[in-house]
Image 1 (cartoon, rainbow, N blue to C red):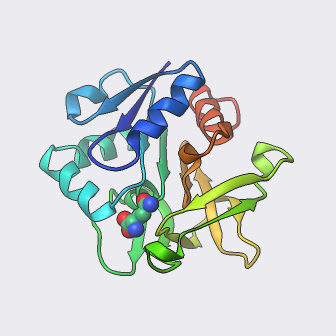
Image 2: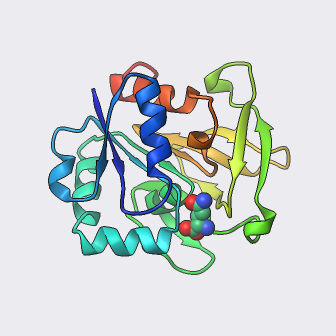
Length: 193
Ligand code: GLN
């Protein structure tokens, strides 16, 4: 199995490291040709405005959108989640418009308001997941067909799945907990549908 990690900008190296720990062949993707033969793609956190500009400049928007619509599994973390949402509020970024969620950018405030908290993610088992939020977005709304995977205590939705698309508002790649990456690998394998 080969998983691509969009390497235009942001925390892509950490995702590659996490996948390697799972013995998965992980490769950085900067050009459309590098998408050939990947079984899934991760869109990392970073700055969604920058990521969308670079994806446009390198002709990746349409390619990634088309492949995902054809069934390529896609995992977006933080800015990556923003890139996947059909609706974005809180000053514009251009997204791929793939997943039936509405997200709000920078929903928890500025850089200094970044925080970490243990959250329950029933799909990953009993142990809580240590979630790192950095100028994070939140999911304001999920349409039919979207499964909520995790919420904060105040019911803010912070992780969800729709078919082979997976999103987290936080950064699983910044912890040593590989369960979200393993969950994505299982989506690719068709194990947890
Ligand atoms: N604030 C960023 C954005 O709106 C996301 C931050 C992140 O990916 N850690 O794009």
